[in-house]
Length: 253
Image (cartoon, rainbow, N blue to C red; front, side, top):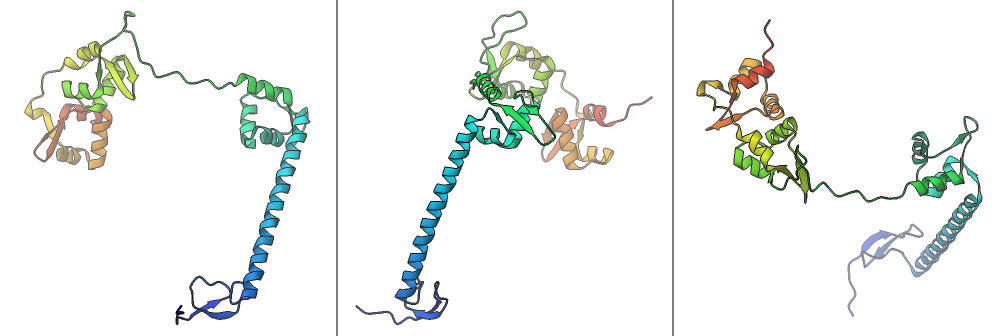
């Protein structure tokens, strides 16, 4: 079998001497260095295994000693419950876990109080999202609109739906991650539309920015936050002058 003529200069990982190798994967200059490195690696592995076993034994002994104690410190309580010290202090501050402060540096917790806390803090599964509701007369509501259906049927924005629902207290339920609104209430709230504004009642974004000294982002935030009506004609966007004046124009005496 032909050997490679390539010679690569490397440094031995064991003795540190320079040598020439025919492979990039060669780590040692000779068999003796490789054997020494192998023995040292095995020695370190045995050392780490022994240290891990000792640490585990010490932890078990401490846990066994703590489990027998009637009164424990905050750190011992945290170790016993498998949480941080701050979590134990929070339980103490909220009055859920009784503790005795003997001095400014000595706090003791009774084992019986820990058991009582665990017995009274049983895990309870949260109830499912509300899937039914009733109207003002106590009658169950069976017909609903989704938010998307309200937007499409009444030509309003998403923020306007939630704003009017909050203002008029429209009953709602949750089903599979969607919000469903009472159909009869939505028909009363969103169907009563005012007369359409005239052309002279609209003002463009650029005119509002020039009149009130606003940036585009500031004006956009006003429109979005207050749910102002707007329309788009070509590349220009218009809003009602009366609505923006009611927000930005100072009151007159």
